[in-house]
Image (tube, rainbow, N blue to C red):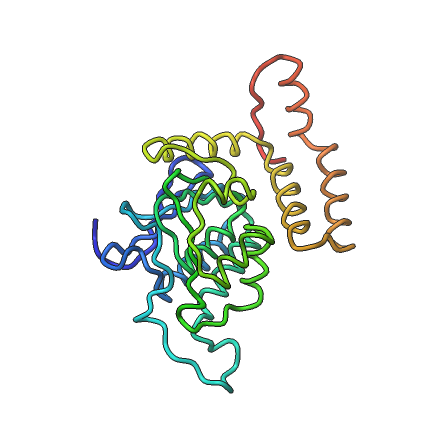
Length: 261
């Protein structure tokens, strides 16, 4: 595999993509250009399921490439902060019109932990470990990132990540609810593709509405506007061809063939 720092997109099936973080020479550390690719890719999604994984090796992601992380200035605007590319990519992942599934094995550091936390769901191998070394680097993590880590890893593990810079193992992260499921390393890829295929079998309007409300609940919502949008989605769904197809398939004991309408 090339040592070039990049994010590789692979089309696995219609509506099913794989994004692979690849920077083997630096243990898949993230550069600003890689983060910009993730941001642009997230903003371009239109209902796809995306598996986010990394190039093979003992490290899923070494965090932000420190050689590409410039020093900041106290009076600089937030948009020019050294970690602005990470903040933008994380926000895009959390608000995109897609379902993101992180597929994690090995060590994950810093910015890599935030990116997998920004995904909707996370599957991991038993050898996965999560570390946020901000306290050891003299970094003050951005507020939205702190909130995200606490939301995903919970009130017990987040302080250990951010204050003690402890490595949290997969079993502990799974018990805390940060991981959907654990798998043997050699079974993770197949398990993730099987799960993603199952997601793709759902009615698009149902997946989208439930995804959006789950995200809103994670953020401490939903707002009145989000509740109204969810109620409208329910009304549209009950009048849709997909609802008629779902009922027909259930009666005929066959798999539904949803068309997104």
